[in-house]
Length: 210
Length: 100
Ligand SMILES: [Zn+2]
Image (cartoon, rainbow over all chains, first blue to last red; front, side):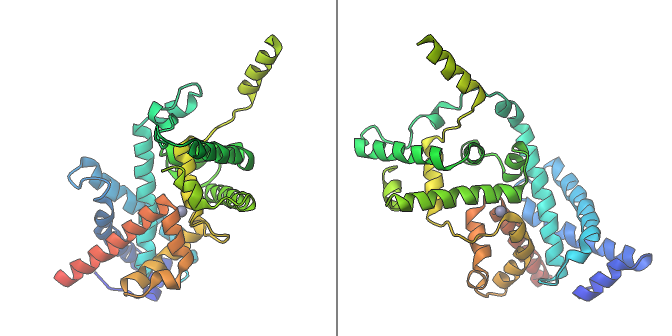
C-alpha cells in the first residue's frame, strides 16, 4: 500500500476514477487495521458481531470522510483524523446497542416505575450520620431544586443514576450531545455560583457525604 | 383538606419535579471542584482530539499545550472513551510497524 502525505491523500480522494478508488481502498485498509485496537475493549474479537461492526464502520467512515473532506484542517495526520471519525461511528453504534439491549425505552417511559431501592435510599449517608450532615445534604438538595431547571435535573438522573449515554440522554430530551453538555455545564456554573454566594465550601459539602 | 389533597395530586400530575437522589447530588458536587467558566463541548473537543493525541504520542505535554481538551477528557465519560480508543489505535499501529 502507498504511504501518502496529507496532501496526497486529499488530492487523490478529490479526484475521480482510479486514483480515487485506490485511495479509498487503501484508506479502508488503514481503518480496518486500526479499529480492532479500539474495539477489543468493548467486544471480544471472537464475537461474530466483531467483524460485522468493523466492516460496517469502515464503509460508513469512508462515506463520511468523503463528505467531510473540506472540514479537515490539517491539524494532524490525515489518517489520525480518519481514525477519529471511525471511532465516533463505531462507539455510537456500540452504545446504541447496549441501550437497546437493556430495553431502556421501557424503563424511561414508565413514569410510575420506582427507581431501584439502593439508588433512592440515602445510601451515601451512613446510619450514624450526624444531624449536621443530613441537614447539609438536604440543604444542598433544596438549592439544587431552586437553581437547576427540571430538564437539567432530569438529564443528571439519566446520566449519573441510570447510566444512560450522552447521545441517548440527548435523544430522550430532544436535544443533541453538544447542547446537553452545555446544559449540564450551565447547571454546574449556576450551582457553583450559588454555593459561593452562600459561603458553602464545596469540600465541606463533600465531607458531609462521607 | 380534600381540596388541598386534590390540588397536590393535580400538581404532581402536571408538574414533574425530579429530585436528585443523594448519589447524583454527590457526583454533581464532585464535578464542581473541576468546573470552569470556559469549557469545551463535545463537538469542540472532537475537532481538536486528533491534534491532542499526536502531541501525546510524540511525548509532548499535551495537557499543558491544550488544557481545555485535557479538561474535557476528565469531565466527559463518552469523550474520554473516544480518546482512549484513538490512543489505542495509534499505539497499536505504531507497535505493529516496529514489529514489522
Ligand atoms: Zn464530551
